[in-house]
Length: 129
Image 1: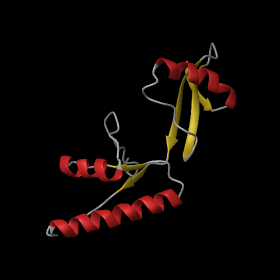
Image 2: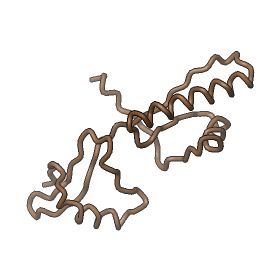
Image 3: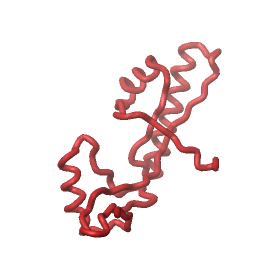
């Protein structure tokens, strides 16, 4: 049976062994952690996984579609500057930007060095049953 228990510093070796087999995922830092736990085989005591819930900061921007291109650019610059400064001041490790627009994605990658995140972004609405 697999159980989840509180992470302990001595778990690092077992977690590192797992990481070495799939290093493309990376190991999350311990900053902005709500909870982290080690997954252990309760019979053998072998560490089989590690999980963490981290604070996820998402920048959201709503703009009037009637703005001229120059005004949109100014608004984006102002919003991004504000989002970055306040996120850094709050100790946020990563600021996520989710967009459905390829052209806006290119702007964010070029102007703000935003990086594509592998995988698919999913959401669970915790306010629903």
